Image 1 (cartoon, chains in turn cyan, blue):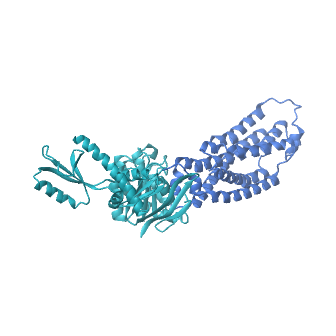
Image 2 (spheres, one colour; image 1 turned 90 degrees about the horizontal axis):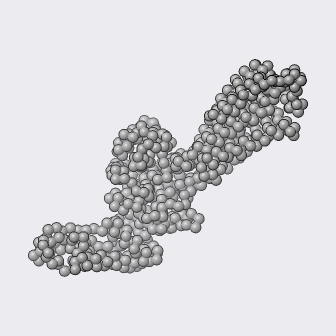
Image 3 (cartoon, one colour; image 1 turned 90 degrees about the vertical axis):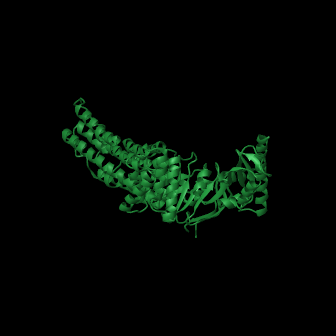
Length: 339
Length: 242
């Protein structure tokens, strides 16, 4: 079953289109990331899914509940973390958590157990008797996450703040989300600009730009759609000439390869040709590289959307073209260094 | 909390002290127009007693009615606009409590708080004025008008003021701005009670009862309109976001 479904979801504020025809299905129990830059529609998507605003067009459901029709039921099965949804600054952290547990109909004993568990997990236990206004930004951020999880939601919607979050908060959040997924089967939708963090935490991704979905899928399918290849990187002893087809980059002799399975063959060929291999590694394109490829490809198409959602032909040609250009620039740079 | 004390304790105290201490000539007379507005048999009362009676009967109701307005507007401004400004209204609207329940609880708690403070203020006022009545020998202030004020008009006005603030929530931008709406609510009552000195109207118990009913009906109508407008998108619209 899909935990989150969006069909042709659109939102317009006056003249500005915040989200345009979003189609998305997120399976139950998965950790999914929506990545994009400024005004890409991430926050709007979370606000639409949590019922804080109504779509101009299209529809969406979370665990089968429509935010526009049954917001109360939706909120019993979902927890939302938004930068703008704050805690009471003049109340202590534990009082805040217990208050929101009570508002969600949680028994006071259960609330104490749950808040204690979450505060320990997020490492904010020390601040439980302090006023929220006196806590650090990172602790407040973790406290907001604890608040959203007080009623044991099945779906967690997180919109990362534009200013980013500190390392401690990132680590604790990652740890807790992994636990919740394994132990409570929580589905997580993370909207963030931090691509490395998203890659670390999530199994599925959607790339948004200016309110449009450019692509979605797992890292491997996004890599293929973006036309990015694996790279084999070698470090040889001394100043030996590289094998054919290799280029110099980032201190390694590198070569684009089609699949991981090509790697043993390359190592074997290098060794059999008498090269003294000090180091050999497989470089997989990161989400950041894939995202960049999509952004560059999108720009080349004059802002047209492409990706899985669009026609196969358009996607492939646009992405490959941009990726080749991107890679050829890198190769050129390597050549210069080599020369 | 200081305003009700100033309005219903300090001002009557200052007035009673001034009435009893200021020198009065033997042939001093209270104007006929003022005496005609009083219900007490003014022929039996002295100059100081009539002026104090006029104060408690004609002006104190106006001072008393400002208390529910001040308390309602202040509490509703913080409950609606304050929460909106702080971002906690959004968090509450993300809970499993429906928006109508949030609205109802805010309106009822603000109204109740305002009524309780008004009643306590009246108690302090009653003690102050009763003592002054005894010292000055003036007639006991409490009459049918005060009973209607206390039981009907004050609660209706408290409720009306809260609803008024809830209606303007999307039009004002800050708690401070919302507090300024107090003026729109106090001014009509001040004018109403001052107009009676011109002789155009005479505010009696029946008049106050009719006013209470009208205010209650208007409050119910406005409550329904405001409740329908109380939903997340209207309250929290943020067009410039990621």
